[in-house]
Image (cartoon, rainbow, N blue to C red):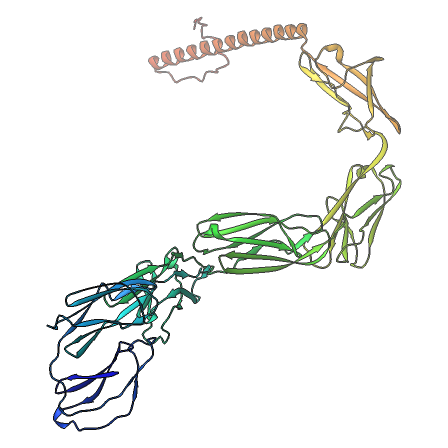
Length: 602
């Protein structure tokens, strides 16, 4: 049996149909407008969809519009603990009415599981459990005086993200673009989800999903591109989620990921020799400036000829330098490479190095110890070099004696050994013709053997000494080997090179003889000793004194006689002047005979 109830206002007409067997109600608005315009009509059966998308079977409703619809209505209300419930959770629904009929009956129509029903005057309550529908609309209905009124409630199920994962970020190169990706796992409803990416306290990107089409659990991925700067180094990136469900707010966040930004703005430099001899181990240096964030982050790789080198690294401010030994066992062109890495940034530098072999030249002297006036041949030659081609020069301490053309493997010099060649040093020099700035030398000294030679430079023929002075008797001779010199005086050997006090008996002739394995030479040396003669000196002094005395007496007598004559002359002139007689010329050497002699002591 199906019962039909009509309720509504002047604007809407709502038909209710009830099946006593199924106790299921359906409602449908079939007319909008004025009751005055309602015409009697007959309609065929219609299928009405339950408000829930997963509700029970739709009802068949036979609608018949009758003139003079039923009069009277009452209100039904729905109360929920919360309109939002976690997926699989439970919620209590309470239905109440305003019908005055104590026999009014009602319940909840829903596809959800109902348990723990309770009722009382004007109300009925149920516990809805295991709510897995993301959106449902349970309906409360009551029948009062043959009329039925229905009220619906909306329940939303949600699941907060099972996990918010911020994918690891690589080490970043300054100025390059990178994606920051956040994955939100098992979240619903996505249409109410907001995902925010932050760098420290700064919001980088916010994304919502109102246009998402799915209704169930879903995984969401949010990607945002960033271009890191130096100020971003050490900053933390986080991903935050928020579910906004009709007044309820659920937040979650990921673990932080630190930004690591690196930069090498300058190319590295290499410092080493362009030419390296086989077996040599010169130093190679590789450095780079402007390392960010710190020079200690720089990593080096030094290789030579494909082989890694051992090296040490030093830092100063933002500059890092690696230093290691370069070597190779084989000649040829080899590549020296240096790679500097900081984070994901790498810079490289390379240099071609020529490894060469230049053997020591060979210097040969036919007789390194030879007799004076012997013929000597000096040969300078070089073993094979790599690269081939060597320029040879034979020289002594003063000048180049002979040079070779590039293709000639040796040079020679012939000479007759003289005394002046004794101790002469010859040098053989080898230089690569390829332009390699290298030179090898080998030296040899010539020894010339000859008999003793004695001359004034080493053994003077005459010595003049003063008695009681300190003197050294010396007589040297040249020769190779050095000759032994023996001097005698009157057959008695004398010491050579020893200082002694000179005596008169040291005067005389000394006979000196020098000898070695190649001959001998002799030389006579005369020594004169000067000394003072006391007797002669005394007699000389007496004679000199007597002579001086005689000279003094004679001088005095001459002086006295001259004074006397002058006095007498003045006396005579004075008398004549008194007598008026002309003056007579007086000889200073004598007086006239009538002039008396006067004695006067002066």
